[in-house]
Length: 320
Picture 1 (cartoon, helix red, strand yellow):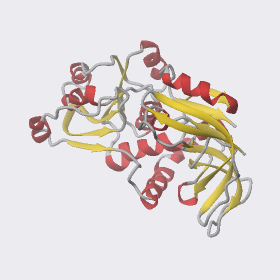
Picture 2 (spheres, helix red, strand yellow):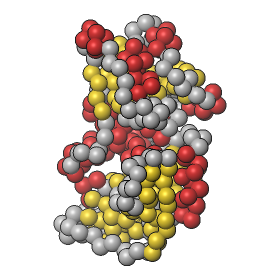
Picture 3 (cartoon, one colour):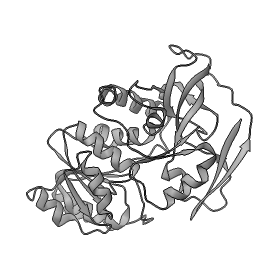
Picture 4 (cartoon, one colour):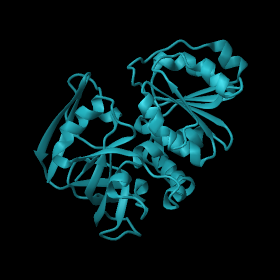
């Protein structure tokens, strides 16, 4: 089968199309015929110099081809979406514990754009962020894949959402998805505007996609007992000062979100919560992933170049 291998680097990624053997599912795994896969910054932008090439693509949507031992309740041809190893390929393997059925309302492209970002967002907003109806959510870098998914999930939970972006055009597009307040900025200078929008109370939860350059401003924007989720570092700034007095006085919670050190059981627990709490909104048509652009399988290098330009709003997808 055809499969792309990715070599990450500090300023971008190398991409190589290889002819490889079709994988065989081990016990608990599912082999799917990939119909679409999605790009994610964490995999494609940056990495350790000299790192070995690896199969690219961390999520996909496709049809069941073969089931490993112990997998029940599925049949060949069933439509699935989920995390995977090597989604930029004709075939990929999924852990059955993390596979989800594709709602009938979603296209292959939309289904491929859902698993990673929406599972991360569920972890941030629901499992750890405890976002409730009527509360305020601030999303820095709101036009990114995680940013848009945070906006959409926040709205179906009944929250009011403030988003930052350097592009007025992107903010205008996101108003159609329910963005309550758009702040045009790429710098750490938004706390005053956030406090004004929230009648001086601050926000209950911040999703920081940008990184260390806005960390201090996120702290200033938080309400009493507010929560700050660290999920991205688009600015490549990996450290920041922490106002301990604000942390203490406002009883703040700061937490990171990553699957890197989580085991399969922990990831599966998040999948079960997402299927229970958020997927019904997708099935009812109240939420659907925002796909900015779809590229052909042969155009993956061009898709990566487009992602590096930071021109998209939402997700970029490769159609197999």
